Image (tube, rainbow, N blue to C red):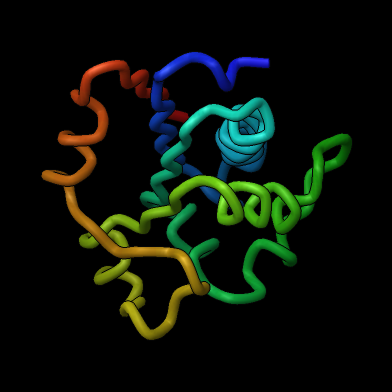
Length: 124
């Protein structure tokens, strides 16, 4: 559908279980874009950083929303998932703690991705 476009979608999730609708929107948009063939980079910041850990997405529930674990799986399959360095450190999450395919990186990498040619950044 949109795969022919040479664009990247950078989605920053700033909420987790503390704001479930905002969190689910970020994951839904990112997974939908991946399914449409778009190059996607999902950033987990703030409380969404917890979803970088094994089993945490399975605990998330929101009526009438696709399961977060399924959305995360879709994104990890064909996109990129990054946990914020500072957010991870505040939660004592290290590189050995996160799901396979999740990296930990900081603001400089986010800015580089968001300002790249053809990139569109969305923050939820």
